[in-house]
Length: 426
Image 1 (cartoon, rainbow, N blue to C red):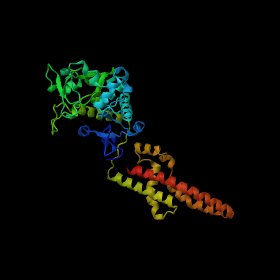
Image 2 (cartoon, rainbow, N blue to C red):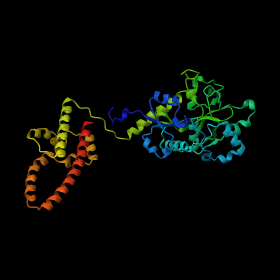
Image 3 (cartoon, rainbow, N blue to C red):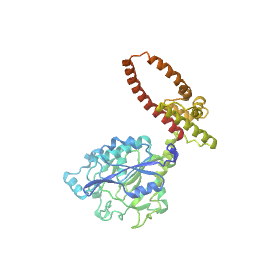
Image 4 (cartoon, rainbow, N blue to C red):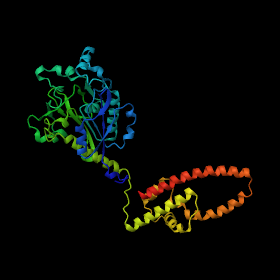
């Protein structure tokens, strides 16, 4: 693949890793189901490591064509007005005991993911949030969360009507019902699996927090029987064919598979990833259309022969300048091709001329190095006459000065000529 042919580069989806401890050391990981689906539908997952300071380096991950945020610890409560929860210190301590692995706040991950979510909202970059990722999206837009569903929501229902949103003993196998809202993307994806009266599917979930107040820009797509929002999207930013996709799912469609099987519970389970990647691909094309990227030139046999002669000519000129050696008469014909190239500009495409100009050299101010080489002999004669009249001290100073200038000139010229040769050869 040519290095400048961006049309063949797959779109990039950023995914932030989650920190864990293995053998007394921190390790970063991302669930493989997410990666498989992103790759399978035609994008490249780019893992953003959850390490200190990365939130200041997000520009280095450009270009960003999509963002997928998934599992992780609880979001820092101070980011969504947690004081209104009314939970007592004793209740908060009990929550920490029940959900030890999830209640350890990771502020660096919060900072990275909220920055990415806001970037997507500002630029209309496709965004898919799964589980924690949906909560990040809601918080980024001014929504709030239940600090603990059990303490704030479930307790309002009789025990036999409470929804189990997390089962530590049956992580992948746990399911609970959700009611799908009509005329939403989720409805379209699972339409063939929905009974008209119930509009229900059974989903896998693993969370003790969830959306409390949904941000104003979003519309719910599914509710659990206790009223918890299990999916939402921005209808004004949803059109995958045009590169628009802003959505959050509290449940895990990627995990909704029978034990030891790659088949999904419902045909619609992978649709969120499929439509997300469709939007990512469209967004990349839209982004690339605003950037003029020159296509590699395809030359016929005759033009390819001329191109090689010009490259040889430039290489020879470079060697003559670098070594300071005299030109052998037999080499003059080889230099002629490069001289004609610079003088006529007939062999340059518009793209090549622009690339030369960007390097600070144009065909018109470059001149003919053939004429410069022919002038060397006359310059040498004049220099010898002048130096013959100088004192030994003056000659020593002059020698030192020109030795330094020659070294600098050689280095700069080497870079410039090598750059032109490389550019023509690409």
